[in-house]
Length: 157
Image (cartoon, rainbow, N blue to C red):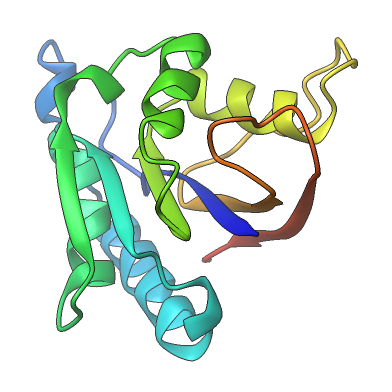
């Protein structure tokens, strides 16, 4: 079994004309540190690989999580403004990873979490707010339609 960790970036400053370079607020930086504490205290969920949007706010969210660890991270520009279909393809390309984390943005990260949790429901009951994370146990990262369950839903602060 694999763990698929879907994390929305921490709280950011309001909208700017340059959305890609929005930074975390002081509260968002605290949220990112709390996420790092979660993983330090729950090593069974510690990702083997983080696929992170290359937007500034996602990189700032990832930094404390991977600091002082051996976690590998890949920054992928395509995780910014991504469709959930393309996110599924990227995840399936990493089927050999036991604990895979995706750090990305709404609406795709929430839509993806919702479809994993309740694929036949129209209502989006899994909407990830800043710094919220859903951890799914899945049988195979290249076949997310089978044998999956929501193991944990976490909000840092």
